[in-house]
Length: 281
Ligand SMILES: Nc1ncnc2c1ncn2[C@@H]1O[C@H](COP(=O)(O)OP(=O)(O)O)[C@@H](O)[C@H]1O
Ligand SMILES: Cc1ncc(COP(=O)(O)OP(=O)(O)O)c(N)n1
Image 1 (cartoon, rainbow, N blue to C red):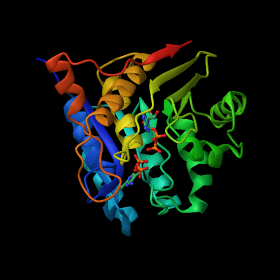
Image 2 (spheres, rainbow, N blue to C red):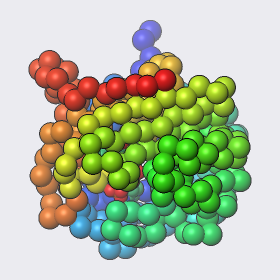
Image 3 (cartoon, rainbow, N blue to C red):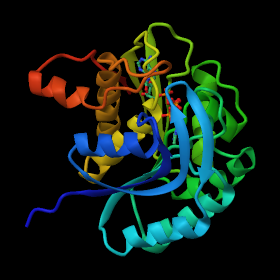
Image 4 (tube, rainbow, N blue to C red):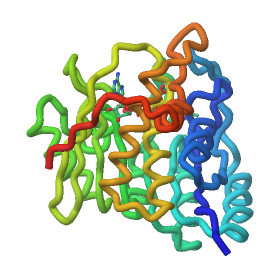
């Protein structure tokens, strides 16, 4: 009997539907895996910003983790907004208890509009409890700087920051380049504990329809890992997925609109080219 790969996202809810749990589940669906979820916080949020954050109690998180863990056969999972040290510890405990593998940690810290999605004092808990369990960590540039204390200004400091993330116990890291200053390219830098490295480069798309890019990228990697894809191949698909999602904007809302989660499959179906992703080893 064919079994659909099952995934889990442990993240916050975005009422605007562009980031968080909503972005993750849409991405899982598009890439053909079954998605389950543990909601860590409810945000009142739209394309113009985050109006309020309501973190869930540790008990609410624990019982959601148990409900998923006791029933589903999770092949890969991701974490997003974890908000406080207690939620991080509870999450790490469950991941170890259930022996979940293929953990993608998206160390979500600050939303585009500036709202703190992780309490500043929780960065240490993330480093101590979660990064050592990670198969892949996917910080954006400011998150990589906060995790490592290294200011990323060029390819050398980017490499040093990636090495520092691995020294915290993660098996691999991708430093995403959405916040980079290169007007032509959005480059993501990959480094594995085994010494392998790669740059995934795409044409930078001039758009403000970028809400949820990080969540969507990490969810796409998770879906591909659940299907048994090799890590670099999973990252390449995630980069193609986000490139397509940014290329066909939905133009929804008054601010930073969401990316188009349906664009990747639509383009494959219609055999439409997306900007090529270049990979430099
Ligand atoms: N304007 C853009 N054009 C092309 N790719 C982009 C653009 N902005 C972000 N990306 C890509 O989206 C993914 C998420 O990156 P980033 O925006 O840095 O994450 P976050 O949403 O966590 O800040 C990465 O693959 C990055 O290169
Ligand atoms: C509930 C929730 N989780 C995560 C984020 C951050 O998402 P991200 O993909 O980093 O996108 P932006 O906030 O930068 O648009 C969020 N906003 N809400």
